Structures are given as structure tokens and as C-alpha cells.
Amino acid sequence: MRVEKADLRREAGQRTRDGLQTAALELIAQRGQEGVTLREITDRAGANVAAVSYHFGSLKKLCDAAIEHALERYLDDKIRELDSLSPTATLHEVAVAFARPMMRALSAGGQDLAVMRTVARVGIDPPQGWDRLDDKFDRSRRGAVRVLAPNLPGVDEEELIFRTRCAAGLLNWLALAPIGTELAALSAEQIERQLVPVVAGAFRGDTPTGH
Amino acid sequence: MRVEKADLRREAGQRTRDGLQTAALELIAQRGQEGVTLREITDRAGANVAAVSYHFGSLKKLCDAAIEHALERYLDDKIRELDSLSPTATLHEVAVAFARPMMRALSAGGQDLAVMRTVARVGIDPPQGWDRLDDKFDRSRRGAVRVLAPNLPGVDEEELIFRTRCAAGLLNWLALAPIGTELAALSAEQIERQLVPVVAGAFRGDTPTGH
DNA sequence: CGGAATGTCAAGCCACTGTTTGAATTCCGT
DNA sequence: ACGGAATTCAAACAGTGGCTTGACATTCCG
Image 1 (cartoon, each protein chain N blue to C red):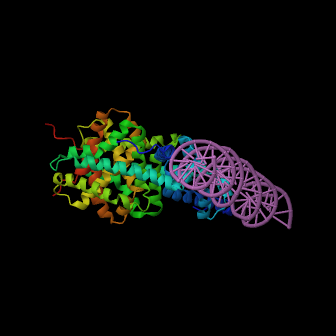
Image 2 (image 1 turned 120 degrees about the vertical axis):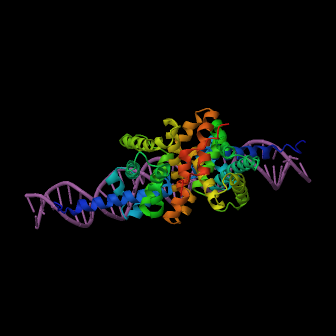
């Protein structure tokens, strides 16, 4: 199929819009939403300061757009990963699927990693009114419980969700803290060999062998 | 023992110095070092803006002082907790000792929690030149390896340290993310019952039963 | 008492923030 | 080619940031 019309004005507008959004994403990933400056974004995107007001209305709305985009990419990725698992998957397989988006981002770096870092920051300072993604959050959580429950028959759902959130928190920590950067320097196989047992162990838990 | 002299000027100076430092600590814990303003600190401490320059030289140096103080309190606490363990302690006992400073802070709230949140933020954005605490970092890490190794004979030291850092990262995440606040609403026993198995599981790891 | 040391305070300085404005530019439709 | 919509731009705006200044207050010491 061909494009109907080559309206160069609108194309250019879309390009600066995208440029601003990715520049904002990268800076949010680096320094958090509060540590980001209008002129830093526009400099990086090669745009004028007024472009932000023109295209997004305000700096805050630009950041919201960038964050929501990142969050949605992350959730879609995670849901796809979990849904691809058979209900009889082993705990190790579940942990691999659970950690894969983050491991991929660590290996890939660049924009994928920026998405993960942004998601992790949002996990610390959750903004208000993200109703639009509530459904995907639910699906992600239910997807994890679905494949986790058969492996951990003795653990009730509430605690399953707690462990899921702990594991997600650990992965988010890796996205932000220096240990994640150190990990990223290794090969994908080494990352998986070190990280997956920890995630799987957190899922399984370790209760003292009852007397 | 008695104070030599009651130099009221220096006492008052020390009081504002402390007030500024704890105000800075609480605000850093809430919003991070970058999200903190001079006037917010001085308002909270009931001091004048010039007091910061006078007593600390600059806002940055005040924050550094507050952070270093928090970090030292945290490390001392953790080292004491780990050193109190026998070399034959079970993995569960190790996990309890490892997580106890954070669990205590979550239950206590207030300044103890502010210390933990600040430490967690420092874990994400580590400042430069903290040579003075390097020794305590080392002691903390060696203390963990000492009690972990007998429980996990098949795991080499490098991976032991990795798992220790993962567990610490998970605890730091709890200090910052909403899940920590939810956890803090529970009783100390409930917190321990949910959290310790996850930490212990992360220590133990979960490798696929391999042939 | 008088000078020095110590601390507090209100005011102001300058850099930088997000946002707005009005003109200039580019490009489509006619 | 012309009108007009879409987009870009330099300049300016008000607000706030950290920091300094110079005057004032209090206390110590000779």
C-alpha cells in the first residue's frame, strides 16, 4: 500500500514530535522526571523550546506521553512473554520468561534500556490516573500467577502476588542501580545464568524446614 | 562527666546544624537529592537560608553530610546484625538478620525509614568519593559471605556476592516503592513471614534440577 | 567596658526554569 | 501565484533556584 499524500509539513511535525518524545524518554531514564529540563530535551532533539508547548501543551504532558508509551511497551512485552508459557512450565522457565524483557534490555542498551529505566522510575514514583493501562497491569499479574501457581501449590495467591512484585522490584532495581550496568557488560548467557536462579529462588521462597 | 563550659553560641549553632541535616535527610528520602530545595529545608528546620552556606558551605555539602551520616548508620546497623550471627546459622536466620534493619525501619517509620530511603536512593545514584566508608562496605559484604557460604557450599564467592547485592537491591526497592508502604502497614510478624522467605529464596537460588 | 568571635536575618543578585508571543518559514489546495 | 494552515524560531516573560551581602544580635574573653 502507498501513502495517500506526502504532506511534508505534517511529516516534519510528526518527526519533531517523535524526537521530543524519545529525547524526553532518554533523559527521564537517566535522571528521573524531576531532573529533566525543557531546554535539555529540545537541544537533544534539535528542536526549539516552543515546540514542546506547540506539540504537547506542556513539559509535563510530554513526559506523561513518553512514560505512558514506555510503560505500554513494557507491559505488552511482559504479557506476551508470560502468555507464551505453557501452564506446565517449570519454575525455571517462568523465571526466564519473567526476567527476559529486562535481560534483553540490559544486553541491548540504548532505547530499550531507557524504556526499562523509565518504567522502573515510574515504579518508585507512580503518577496518578493511569486508568488506561490498569487492564494491562492486571493481565500481567494474572499471567504471572497462572504459571506460578502450579509450581507452588502450597502458596496462596496473595503471597504469590507479593513474590511477583518482589521479583519485579528486583529487576527494576537492576535497571537503575550500578549492579545492572555491571551485569550488562556480561554476555547474555552469563546474565541469565546469574540472574534467573535468583528470580526463581525468590519465587519459590525458602521457609525453614518445619521442625 | 560534665561539660567544660556552656558556650551558648556553639550550642545554638550545633542545634541549627542538626536541624538542617535532619530536615535535609527527610526531604532527600522523600524526593531524592535533586528534588530538594534550599528554602524547603530551611523552612522545615526553622532556619534562615544563609544558615546553610554558613554551616555547611553549600546545599550540596549539606546533602552530602546528611547522606553520609545516613549511610554510616545503615552500614553500622547491618554489620552489627550480621556479625551477631554464628557461622552455623541457617539460611533463614541469615535472611532474617540481613533484612532486619529494613524491616525495623518499615515498622518504625519516621527518621529510621528516612535513613533507609536515603540509603536506597544513594544506591541508585552513587556519589563520588566516599572513600571514608569503603571499609564498612567491605565489612558488610564479607559479613554476609561469611554466614552465607556454609549454607551454600556449591556456590562460588562471586555469585554469593551477586546474590547478596540482589537481596540488598530488593530491600532497597521496598524502601522506595509503594509495595514497601503497603508492607509497612502490616505487623512486624506478618512482614517477616512474607519477606524473609523471598530473601532466603534469592540467597539459595533455584537451579533447574539438572542432569 | 571593648573588641573579637559566633550566629542569625532580610534583602538582593544572577542563572536558569517553563511558558508565551508574534513574526518568519514551509508547503498544500485552489 | 495566492491565501492560509502547519510548523519553526528568537526573544521576552514571570517565577524560582542557590548563594552572597552587610547589618544586627549574642556571647566570650581580656
